[in-house]
Every structure is written in C-alpha cells, then in structure tokens.
Length: 240
Length: 296
Image (cartoon, rainbow over all chains, first blue to last red; front, side):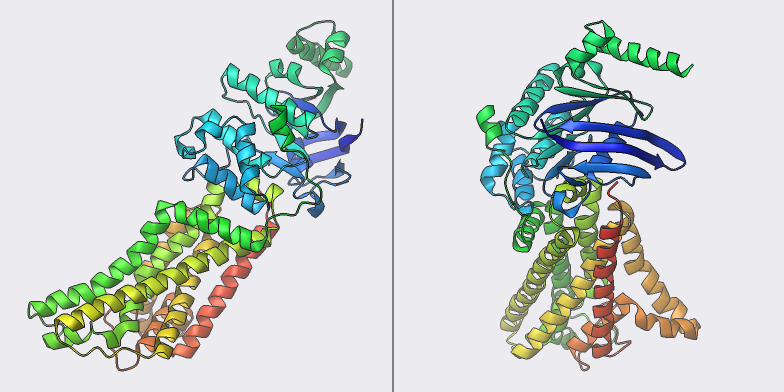
C-alpha cells in the first residue's frame, strides 16, 4: 500500500509555543485515517501543515509525492474546516455549482457531490435555513465537488446527531473505496473505531500510529478510550 | 453509495476553473444576493429623485432655487443635461454605495470562511481576484448604463410633458460619460474590495469606507482646505475630489451641477489619471495581500 502523506520530523511553533514536536507519520492512500486527540493536541496544526497553509519550523511534509502546499497540489487536496464555509445567502445547489464552476467542474459534479453527502433533497434550500449539521455537510459537498485525491476534514461530525454521524462515516468509507484518501480529525475517541488507521496525538507528540485492532490488542482492552488512557499513562511513566 | 462515490473518483489532469467560468460564477453569486440589488438599485433611484424628480416637482410648484427662476429648474432636467444628471451622485452617495458593494464582495468571503475552501483547492489567488473584479466591473457597467437609460427616459418624459426642447447629447459625449462614470464606479468598488480584503471582513471595512467617503473628504475639502494651504494642495489627490472633478468635467463647464461633491477642483484629464492610479493601486494592493497572507 502506498502512502499519500509522509511527515518527517515536523516541528511547528506558533508564537513562542512549540505545537508539534519532531512528529513523523504516514497516511496510507485510499484509506480513512483518523487524527485523534484532545483539544490542543495539535490536530488542526498538523492538518494545516498537510494542506500547506501552516508555516513549519523544520521537517518535511510530502503530499501525493510533492511538498505540501505546492501549486501542483492545489486541485488535488481538499480541506474542510470545522466551521461551515459556504455562502448562507445562496441555496445548497447554488453553492455546490458555484464551487464546481470555480474548480472547472460541471453541474453534474455538483449534483453528485450533494447526493454524496445526502443533501439532494435540500438542494433548493438557502444554506442559512439549514441546521448546523446540514451546513457542515453542504460545506463538505463544496469540497467534494473538486474531486480531491486527499480530503482533509477537521472535526466533520461535531454537533451531528448519531444517525447522521453514522451516515457520514459510511460516506467517508465509500469515498475511500473509490480511491480518495481521507484524514479525519476528532476529539471523540468512540470515532476512532470507524477509522482504517489511527494517529493519536497528545501535546503535539504522536502517541500511536496504528489500526484500531492493533491498538486494542496492544493495550489489552476493547475500549479505545481506555487504550488511549493507558498509552498516556505509559508515556508519563517513561517520562518520569 | 458506492456508485455515487465512484462518480467522485479522481480525475486525471483536471485543471481549475477558467477565468470566464470564475466570472460567471461570481456574477451568479452577485445576482442572487439581495444586497447587490439594493445597493445597485439605490444609486440610480436616488440619482433620479435628486436630479430630476425634486427639481421638476419644485418647478411645477413655481419654486425657485438659490435665486434662479423656476425655468432654470426645468432646464436642469432636460435631455441636454443627460450625462450630468445620470452621474452627479457617483462621487458622493453613489461612491458610498459602490464602496459598500466592493467591501461586501471581498469581506464576506472571510466572514463566511469560503475563501479557505476556494483557495485551498481551487484556482490561483490572482485568477480568483481577477474573476471577482471582472464580475464587479460587469455589474457596475450595467448599473451605469441603467442610470443613463433611466435618466434619459425620465428626461424625455419631462421634455414631452412640458413641450420643452429635447436636445440630446451626441453619442461621443454619452460614451465619454459612460466611460467616466464606469471609471468612478470601478474605483470606488475596487477600494471597497481592498478594504474588505485588508480588514478580512465587512463591518469595519464598510464603516471606515463610509466615514472616508462621507465625512473625511468633506472635512478636508470644506474645513481644512480653506484654512491651510497644505490641505488645499492635498485635496487634489483625494479620490472623492477627483471623482467630483471628473463628473463636473463630463457635465460641461456651462452646466451647473448642484449635487454635493461635484466640484471642478482639478481638470477632467487629471481627475481621470488620479482615479486610474487609485484603481490600479487598489487592485495591486488587494492582489498583494491575497497572495502574501496566510489563510486563517
């Protein structure tokens, strides 16, 4: 299996604070990789580094064979921030078609993206009239319409009801099955089990680079949250 | 599910949107926004009210203006004053409205976070800016044309109703008026885009822009310039003063324009060059900011 992303000895500082400490990891192509950790662990900073919008102090980030942020990656990497980024005064369909035109895609691609996030029935509604979860999915559709090879999603399931979360994860895996590489961040450990691969972060350091099954086996528990806690304690004992 | 996802499969060698596609998308976005219609509709509406309707109603009631006979009010509404009557509001209230439109166009992209989605994956930043500005110029050209057409229509009605002469300006004069009006409108719009981009939002950009157009320039011209020589000279470099001077030049030296802000402080040629410089500087600075800054 090839890697879509390779991060080597990445150091990022914001202000006078070191946010990522010599972080190295890989993201396999065509899989859903979960980036998990508590708030402030450096998830968003790492995602920004992958997208190429984060100034790094040292280390390298290679995405789809090119340095992160290269002009050649511009149309190959999609990034969806936690806050919806869509036009509230346009309908869902108009938003998708607007971004489709900007990305050089047609109306068919826009309609397909709306269907892929389950918003085909709400296509005629103004975005400002949608629920927060629907707005998030509209934002996701606008990123999908560009058909990126790497899709970076920052906490896409925050605020969604359990049914929608399940649906969205199914859609992530469908995209991965079609060849898209997804990096999905979350601070909720029960979402870790839905990922093909896990990157666990804490205080800017990589705690684990594993699969859910490996993590359960290594920590001796089926509860991934408990696995995370055991890893943290083990790290603290080593540090002491 | 799989079928849908498969339709989102990876493209090979796909290129981002072309400039015409971006202009089209921006035009669609502008057309769908109520704010666009309100701002672009207000200017011609106010223009008609203050240039034609109020003077004509005053004439009908036999009123005089600053000692001029009522017939002078009627004469100011007739077709030979088409260019002056269509453009006289541009330097002041028209400018304020169009600057607001430009600030909304650029600033709302930051407020809604859409710029991140667009630029992280989409076309080059300069191409996006070019598309936005071309779309803005397109709607402004349409609005200047509508203002000229509406003014011509109402002037023709007044001339017909009063059996007054309908001496229309020549095509070259109208074309010059259209070009000058578009230059003034585009300069204000581009300055709004610059403010919206520089301040990464709409509220402060609109507030500062309005204070500049409606207050600061007026204070410099009416309060500071008569008192200090340095301001007498400095006012010749202000965008509003040059916009007013250009419209005054387009109106003709023998055509008195009562609208505030329309005063021939400099000649028309100089005013056009200064406005062109403001327009070029606003576009260049916006491009620089857009290209150099991180997307937050």
